[in-house]
Image 1 (tube, helix red, strand yellow):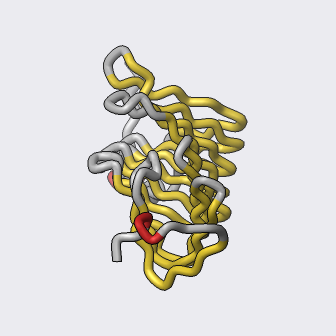
Image 2 (cartoon, rainbow, N blue to C red):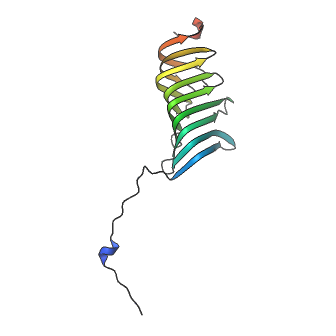
Image 3 (tube, rainbow, N blue to C red):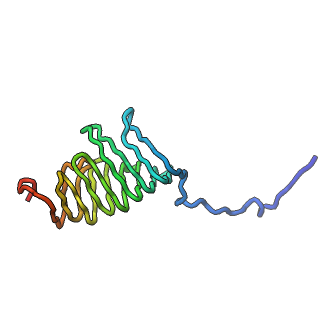
Length: 168
């Protein structure tokens, strides 16, 4: 018979906890297709993706997101230097050289927040909106993913506009 014993000090060692900032998964040059039932909700392509399972957050570097609106049949494209997809709140945060494109027009900004629950997009800083060949510049844009409408502050325009185009 052979028996071993350990000091209680050997069993009570302290280990550092894992840093919550470390992703659960990291991928390079990846494309993700997200489904809502049997329909494609969005496609996300990025040079790098970091996933955090417990928080349901995905960080994407050099990202391109294609979103499909099944109610209207519209397709929107979002490109940014970095994008955070928060699946828990159904929101998308885009930063750096952000460009939103739809058949109705394009929006360029330094950052953008997209609440997908309400289909509302807010670009808090300086914005360039191009629609029907006309360009509007301003601050603090609010629109939807199809760019059907636009609300801005401190607006300047390039192009030919009809007074009926504005809600004074």
